Image (cartoon, rainbow over all chains, first blue to last red; front, side, top):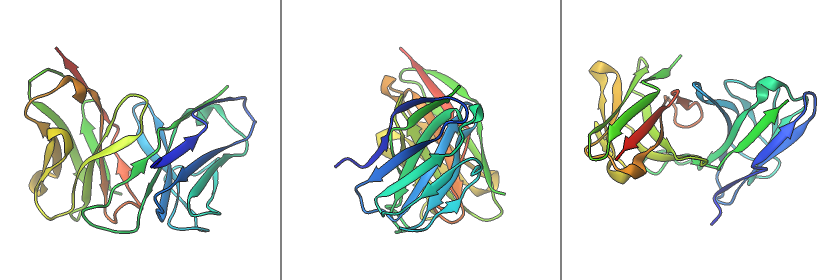
Length: 115
Length: 113
């Protein structure tokens, strides 16, 4: 059982380049999330999705776009990368059920550097 | 807006000593509260969570946390630290579950022999 898989694990971009980060989960989860992690700032929510075909903005959405065409995949796009987007990006997922078993499952992260 | 404050970006303990990681939240109503752990080069893993069923919550690896409404705190403790506990720990808060989960800035736990 792979859980949440992020690709790529590392990437270096030049300012202005574009790229897409892929998140795939095999747990049939409804909810998926993209976070960025920066030193001293914890994790901040970029965008999230509550189901196939839906997306919503989080705390820091500017400069990013997302798509959820298939339930198992959540793509994060950078159209024109900027140095301020240098960060570690985490994808997470969870199912719709509230209660004792509710928790986020995280991928292992993508380290992105924008020069 | 709801938020969490973690006191101390780094906490150092000796192996076998008590671990205490502090978390205070700001919310006008009792929220959902979580502690996550991140080992080097890995994603976050849930340690424990509070959802109003009981004020003392037991999690994995011997960790527990107590919800104190009067102090708006949810501190994480473990009676005896192990070398394998060295990691970064994040407190998180939400009013509605995971749609609006807000993380603290993290506390790195260092365990010395």
